[in-house]
Image (cartoon, rainbow, N blue to C red):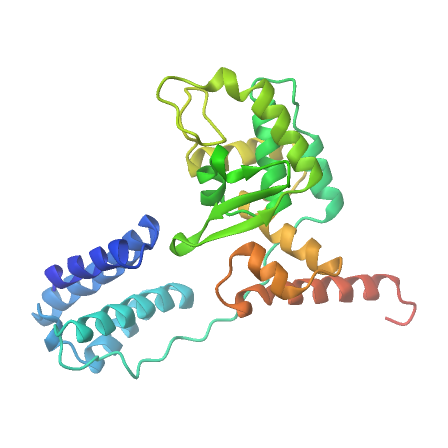
Length: 296
């Protein structure tokens, strides 16, 4: 089964253009399944896998304490692998065709309110070393709702500050244009003019946000920077980069933005992914009603 899995991962990388993280996650799920089949059932070929075997594997993982969301990821990996294997003739019939995805109760995303966002952004000391860079990063995360990987990948040629837009490459190598607010543009101009030139080294690329050594900032480093800024802000809550993306979408919706427009700016392929923010807004309205209505 390993050769077929390797061929499938190459397909995801080359033909589908999916991210390295997605390839690794899918490969890990399929590799664990292949190992279980070989060790527990002495099955090493995809064509010998049937639905009862897959169901037994998933049931065992569930009994082992794996969450419903993790089980769902495994099911998705198996379904797309066996669909690929069927199309390529590795198996005669897809054993997962009638396998249903587990139902998962969708939890509402956490958000900051507008005052908390303001407190976080204004707490960044722009006179400190790399303060201009860190302020520009936070401003762009909130102004445009970028994923952390998208922020790390933004290049100078992607920025059009005169027109207030940034070109972003998101999941599946899909590109989109996202507006950049006035305050974020101003923060980016200050960083690009006053601080970034001193970070550039002979091997530096055109990435907007550079490390102290002139290299591209990793997603892990961006996470650490956001965490450090959050600690200095005095906000007593768990603040992380994706929280600013959630806040971006929720604040747009609560101020009257169309859901389809928010979907486009976030780069969601399916409107149902964006609709979770309508529930967040409803929860906020209910909380306000409960607090202030005399007969709530």
